[in-house]
Image 1 (spheres, rainbow, N blue to C red):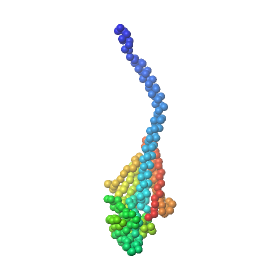
Image 2: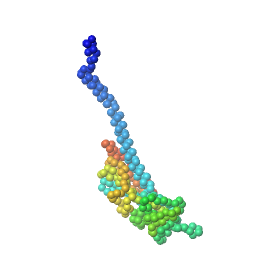
Image 3: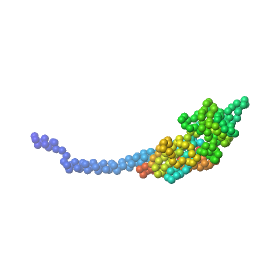
Image 4: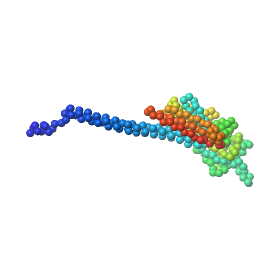
Length: 271
């Protein structure tokens, strides 16, 4: 009776356990060979999709901002390993009254003397709250008609109905279409290949020369990291003097994988 119980309770020997472990390892290795490529392909595709999404989101943000740029205010430059793209962002606009009505009434925008107010034709305009809003008329981006030089800008002090009140100013040139724009602040995109970043800066002081550095506290937003290469360029007369072309090229690299994206944006230069 004791002999039968002992034989029925026998386990695996050490040799049997080693054989099982060895066979299991061989099978696992064979399975790994077959699934390694699909798994690696999945991770590569996911990484490419992520990099493409980052680059695409960044250039689309630039494109959306440029569609709000003041005509003839886009400028691009390079300093060292960094590219800079700057423009004055508009927050509104409309048409000013240039002539009185049949009864002789109406507050016109007079270009022969300093003015402090004028009437807007059409829907009332609004300004961005808590921003220094400037009125701009006929910005050509040349000496005498350059918003960066404050040649044709005046701070808006108030809007009541269809009447806009500004600081006393005599604008140098009338717009052929009686148009005006309202700018709230400048915007700069900085693509720094040294820091491998793409950053957006805004709401800083307007300066005649394009800035290549920004004071501490200037609002900014990091749009992309791991930027291995990039460039900005601007052609002010790619088709006619009424349209310009901004070209943005962005390359993002991560884990040995690179994605490049080239995007062009047409900007209106009709003031």
